[in-house]
Length: 140
Image 1 (spheres, one colour):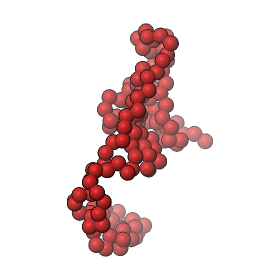
Image 2 (cartoon, helix red, strand yellow):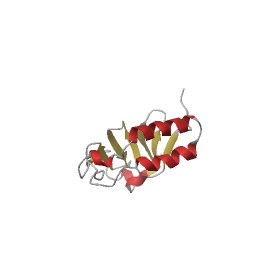
Image 3 (cartoon, one colour):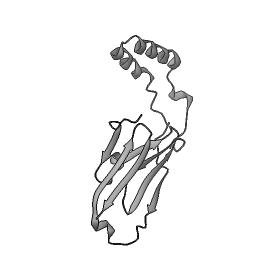
Image 4 (cartoon, rainbow, N blue to C red):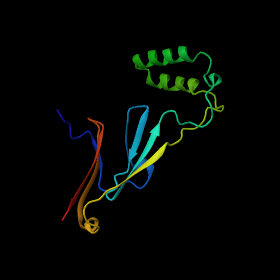
């Protein structure tokens, strides 16, 4: 059963990264801009980081703190759990910064160069039920 309320959609392509639609599986990800003539997909992969990992970034007692956070959440004590999360933010050593991987650009051939001027409807959509992004364009 589909739920049409579980969709995010726009009537124009994204111009900036925060406006693109996200897809991914937790390790690989992409931001889909939805270009009608040229599609840009910003690619991401979980191992692209600057800096270096360090066990010194993990606060002492972190596993016990996480267990207590879970206990508080299951007990319905959300504010207390939220406050306790500050204890496991980690130390700000040289852990690094997340970096983008690459931009994939698809140049779409639609048969003629004048078609873009005849576009009457555009829809860029993320279906949260299926995790799929689509772009629909109608022309005269």
